[in-house]
Length: 495
Image (cartoon, rainbow, N blue to C red; front, side, top):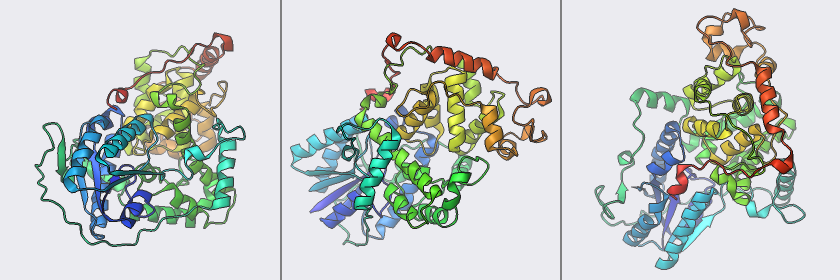
């Protein structure tokens, strides 16, 4: 038996169900397939793609210590993967292909095509449940229907986890080095499909050396680093998570989201290690964030129209989203004149990450006060987030825009100035990202008004007028709601 483990967003060795199952049944070779056109179509950020690249470098070194070769291949998009895998399986003499399941509709279609290819070759295909604490098809309400609201979903998941407990898979074996055919870095399977190459030869975004160095310092790569972050958080900060998590100036969150997104650490590992802390309201709240992550993947499986960038609530097609490119540009680059919004957008551009409280503030400002389609913001976030996860990003944006499952009611519209004063009362966060406002006192920094320095733009709108406009736009009798047709994105053409 020679098995092939196909790495996707599971870039780790420990608690990797597919890798561990593959090595338990025979010698194993690992493979990563780069899909640059697919990444671009799905709006994956250059910082996220570089994060994947750096984690693959570390992963290849760690796997080599266990005599597991990590090979690399490239096709433009998902459509070319079945043919590429067919040739790789044939050249290497693979008996079984293992991978961990991914949930978006276009990735499920890709895996269905791969499964058909394996059946044709009479090669076993195993797609393991690895990303979530429980498989999406294992959680239903009493009517045997999928949950539409988070709280009853989370209670049902917790009840099952308490009954069964979460089990971590440990990787400890070291195999003999498998014999491979001579593979040149120039070997090609056809004119359009590049076969096995070195990691550095793949088509990564062209980024300056200074940026690459900066990103590597912001988000160090590797499973060991992710473990250190998790242990430090659980041992030192998790019991203060609930009171501190909404303060953007405080290091009160785990910041593990990039590592979870590309699978350098698993949700199961996070859950199990959180149970090592004293179970209080803070631990419960942090576990709920893991469950929110699972819930948005669950929603994608059971309500697949969200994968096509439609409103989850398909009865909300009446909203007259504004076509306001100048307003959108000011929001994107932190030039709205609303300090908390501008600070958050500058944090995103500088670090590829944004504190969750301000993610909600800026999302609601765009979709409610500016009445710009939430899909514009969703796309911008994906293009810049190092932790850009389609399901969580889509779910968060639809929550803020009141178009999603478990969404904020349409009349709930955060006042960004009030939010800023409540969660950053000393203006520490604002001063960090908006140094031009640093000299203002703690009262006026949240709403500079006449004290605004000339280097800072005036507010782009009066918040009360934006709120009234949003309320009028959303408040339409239900019988007048047309169906939402969505805004389709390029990845649907390259599945």
